Image (cartoon, rainbow over all chains, first blue to last red; front, side):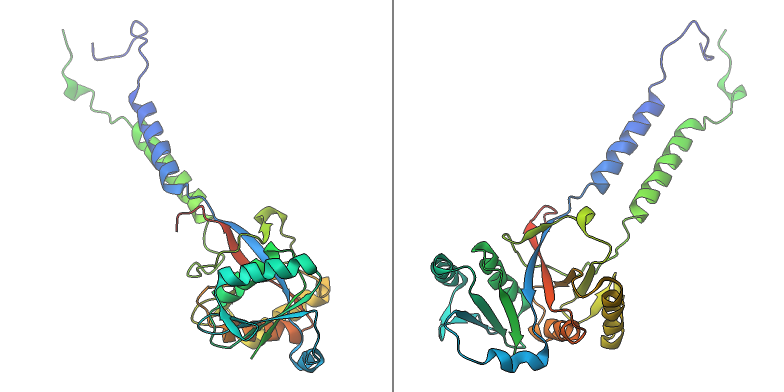
Length: 131
Length: 141
């Protein structure tokens, strides 16, 4: 029979399948999970205040970042080594001031990694200098 | 006797309307996700930082994007150093110097570009700066 009558109460499936397919495609296309971001805090002293930091202080931890990597205690270290150094230092005190000095051509990723290590050992007193 | 089909030649509109509606919904939802940040920026990992949730960010926050090329932008609008200084000063006048100032810089950005932005912040009296990093990768990029 071509025409629908109440004798034939069969539900029409085609539109429902259409809609479900569309919804499926919609979710497959649109669902992309966002990365979880974190923030790493640091201090940036005013450019002319640099001279105030020049006095030698034992509680200051100095980390230099160059284009090739990190220099700590006048020695090039890997991030793993820096991690263990900072672990040791944080056991003494987490209040020490960390001075991070970056050369202008060092990649930003190194700085973030160093800050991440400082955060890992709860050393939040970090200042960034550029040279 | 079966009727010839040609007589009932009216087109069934329902599936077409379904599809069109779906398309409309699709575009409405996706257009809202238009980029309000520089998508070329590949952030470095920072697993131990403070987790950032978009919902918790106060309206006073300022996120400065620094691309690998040195392009500085806010909400994907390129800014000159002067314009950036202006923006930071506006924020500072309205919220004080303690507003969350965040730098989203590519992991391969040379430090000089980041230093430039930090110097502008420091010159405006904003010394507390945060760097945005990735705590956990979810997007598979």
